[in-house]
Amino acid sequence: MEEKKDKRVENKQDEEESEEKRAKTVLGIFSRQQFIMLCVGVGLLLLLIVITVTSVLLTMNSGSGGLETMVSFPTDGDMLEFLLQNGEIQEKDGLYATWYHAANSKAEMNKALESK
Image (cartoon, rainbow, N blue to C red):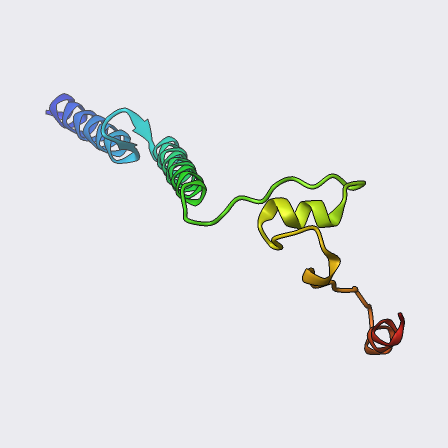
């Protein structure tokens, strides 16, 4: 009788251990920690794909808009020639161009406006 009780106790313990192992695994393959890491990896991959697709679509759409493209201007180039090429002025005459002077303060701006 005691042997039967011992076997029942052992079987019960074996069943509990196997249930604990099943409870600790997800889908019978991954441990809980592995499953969480897999979910985080898949989530990051999906986020990367969404960001990449969005940026590519925005880049493609911004290039085909109705905005006019600017002609490149070398640093030692002629400003009047640049304005003429961009269609800002119709002939190479400085009176047609609007010039701006950068200032770091209101006093510098007033000084620049008063200068000739």
